[in-house]
Picture 1: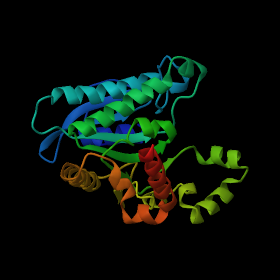
Picture 2: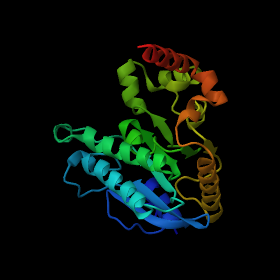
Picture 3: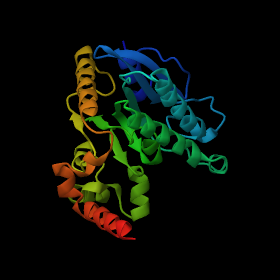
Length: 271
């Protein structure tokens, strides 16, 4: 029975990997997935965290460094092995931990360390899969999940990928939340729905029909199956993130971004 008092990230970690081998704020641990050992990682609330802004499921100083350590430990365990274990980042992060102390002590370095670890694992041959089960917001998602070979998400209320929360975006753009929702229907990057995010070519699979808060055994097994399929796809593909600009959805909805990249590369190579 899944403890419904936990955050989604914690619940799905328990459902897919069992009990963690590390304490909050970053849970990690090995579990069997598709007949092989996979390393699961998620960020969970830490009410006793010494940084007041980092007590919920956010990425702050300690979270960034601990994410990096969890990934590097998996890499070290497979050093010299022919087949590298998959790394599954279970994503449920509301934001990076903003605060004066965090900025002074180098939250940018902590988050960069996590990004570098995930990218290094991908380059070393670990299939890195991000499973979005809740919010995947701003710099927190960049540090935990965005460097994955493959990104999959539950199509459920509360799952979203964006630079900032809807209420904050409404204030910044001087619109109401309702007006922001209307914009999202015609301007894909403004939308907060996972279906719209998928149209940008950044999402490899949207998993429908899953109760994100209290999945039953059959739903958990469906998610496992998706993870196994994406691990296989990652191993068969290259280790770069180029596919995010090559899909039909990306070519249609990110045509301007793709053209800007092409012109920048052209000018850079000409120097």
